[in-house]
Length: 329
Image 1 (tube, one colour):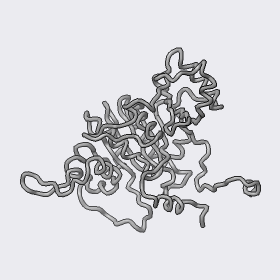
Image 2: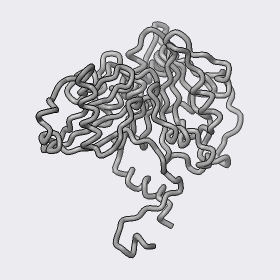
Image 3: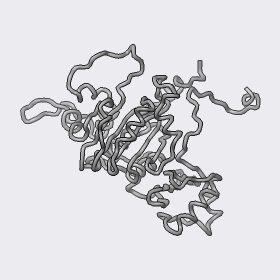
Image 4: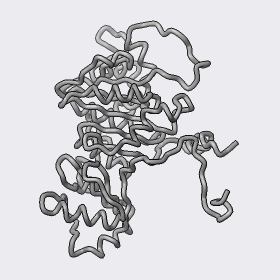
C-alpha cells in the first residue's frame, strides 16, 4: 500500500522469491571503457590476470562476487548482442563466450541447435564446462531442447532420464497405465520426445524392410539415447563413469527428493536438472519445494546454474503468464 501510494511498481508473489542466487550481473560497456587501462577484450582471463579482473567486476557490479560461484557478466553496449564473460570457479578463470562457436551451438546428430539469445549462450557454456547443471526458465525457453541436444552429442553412453509423474491435479489422473516401464513413463517425458522431434523432424510412418510402419524417434532413437528411470527407483542408483542423469520438471520435487538426487553422482557422474518455479501449479508447497530451497543454498562450485529468460512459442504465452499471475482475481 505504501509503495503504491508513492507510485512505485509492485508485484505480489505467491512464492516468496527472496535469498535466491542470481547468476547474471549486467553492466554497461561505458563502465568498462572507463577502466580501459585494466580491461581488454581478451578471450580469457586467468592466472595473474584473474584476480585483477575479478576485482574490477566486483567494483563495477557494486557487489562482492563469489569465487566459488558460476556466474556471467553480461556487458551491454550499443550493439544488440551483448559481450559475455563466464566465471568458471573450477578452472579459476573468466571465459569470453559470446564469440566462441562451441558455446553458441550444440551438435545434435547432423543438426546444430544454435543459441537464440545471451541466456541460451550461457546455458550451452554451462552444459559444456560444468559437470553438474541446473537450468531454469519459463515454458518454451529451450531448457529441454539444449539439454537433449547435449546428450545426443555424448555418444559414449545412454542418458538416464526421469521426472516426477505428477499431474496438474489429481482429478485428471487416468489411473493405472498398462505396459512396461518405458511405456508407462513415455507420456510423462513429452519434453524429451518433443525435443527429438524438433531435431529429427516428423518420423511417423517410417517403414522397415518388412514393410511394417514404425516411428523412428519413439521406436529407435529414444531407446538408443535414453534409459528411462521411474523416480522412485533412483534411491539406490549411483551415477558412475560418465553416467548422465537428466531430470525434468524438478519444480515438482520435494526437498527430500532433491536431496536424494544430488547425492547420486560419483566423481565422474553427471546431473542435469531442468525446471521452472512458475510451473508448480500449487502441487508442491513453497515450504516443501526442493527447487526453491536449492536456489536459496546456491551458489556451489560443483553446480552451474543458468536461468533462461525468454520464450520461443506462440504469443498465447502472454495469456498463459497472465493466468498464472496471482494478483489478477
